[in-house]
Image 1 (spheres, rainbow, N blue to C red):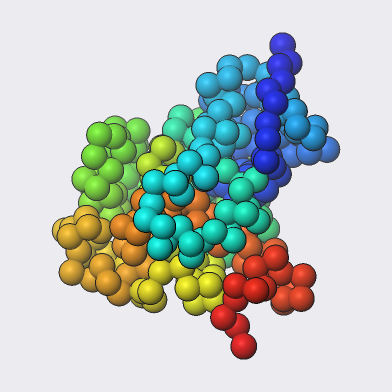
Image 2: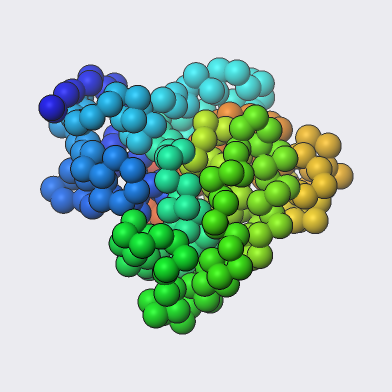
Length: 295
């Protein structure tokens, strides 16, 4: 049965574009149909101010990102930091956080493979082949090396062969995501960015910002935080961001401690904006041009 919910200041397309849940869907004529994992056949599509869907509304809330309101999260942070991202909120308030707490193995693979490669060109293609096997025969049956020789695929093959994904569902983000982070960082080839992305897109812990090259570039241009370094895994295993000795230098730690539950959204917007404007040198069309420090 098809239902509809009225939406305001929302874009399904822009919300799904940066989400790692994208790999679980087939997109045709702006209709998103879930083809892997749980709830296969779930559909959602937008027509102006109406968001159509079949299935449970609770699932829609998470899958579409409607559960997340960036303005509400921004209202809880200090005014001095809120003023730094005010223009981001005005321009990108239509983007929410589409998450999936159900398909943990699928989400891990999507995030793990996304390191230093084009997500929409390579990762989506790789995941389609891998997920077809997982849904039919299980994760241990996947022959990742047959898909390609990229280092991301080769490393995933080792992680699977060593059994690190066999009990992934037992590694619960709740009740303490910091303990979860320490445990997950012990998986080979998994660093802070991968862990934070996993937490961000499989739970409602939206403060976990997975700092990447997009965030570093946007931060340099817009001055969102004063730090300029990426996290150090050795410290992430031992400390939370709040008591880490490297906090003042770390972009991730600064985002979390300064912006709280808005931090993950800011990282997501950094990816969207960098992809749509900065990487394409569309400076004269950029809606953030007046805020940019670029000479």
